[in-house]
Image (cartoon, rainbow, N blue to C red; front, side):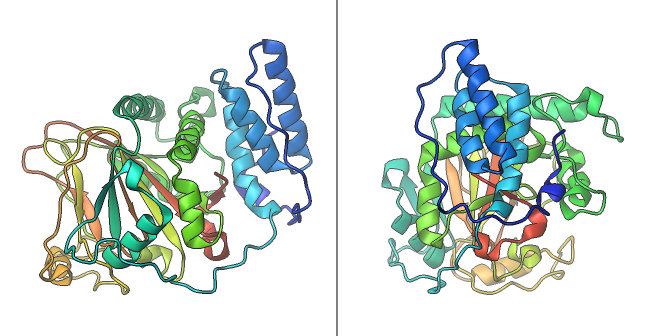
Length: 371
């Protein structure tokens, strides 16, 4: 029986620094070889060699979706964090990176082939964020948007009381105790059917992580952090913002995640955004402090009123980019932003929000997932 992430977090830490990784395998073409790979992956997982099990199972999935294996992958990704030696934090934090846009007063923008660790880190540290055009192909973005619809359909098939018998590969809740932060926050995330935890969609999590590896972003973030990042089960979300949305609020995620963490968020557009569908409003400047919260028209005690946000922006105008499917924004927990609500919205906005944290300062209540 699969264990929940909270049970996995109590496993003893194991130093696997001397454990050899699995040798590369050819893509399987027969059911027998798939069964063999699955069995080997499960055997590795039983020995708490989760990273190897994940690599092998992910390779098997290239032959086609497998509901049982996708479900196991969520569990194994959740368990891997506690089998690793404690990560050593980069001592020079924040690190010194040159400003790649020293004359710019606004949002840095590059094409995918211009993206590098220096570009990513320098833009975040000097301008607060980086817009990357065409990070993934528009056709891939459209396919992922269809997956978001499948995940939301699975959620909408449930009543207020979750029924495991109605679960699908696209929506199967991560089992957590009632008092866990991620469990308690699920209702807020799903309110108005605007979000679904990616960890609650085993098929989308498997597809997204394969896609994420293909972008080359993860090693860039690792170079910047000085550590291999882990995704967050509690912050990585499938978004479908309805055209009927009427309210939005400025915020810095550091207001509730804490300022001492080391993070990068990949906000990935899966549809046209910012004209007739919701987008993002961004204060395009580096902030090393938390703006005043709960005043100036703020909705919550942790968000920032519009008057305060525009005062913080100062003489640098707030930007509301127009996104094409496959465009992305990279930023950290100090960037001041909000969901953009253009005047004439007629379409829903599809996007993925993927938060990655350095293990040495991971906010553990948000559940680390191995990438």
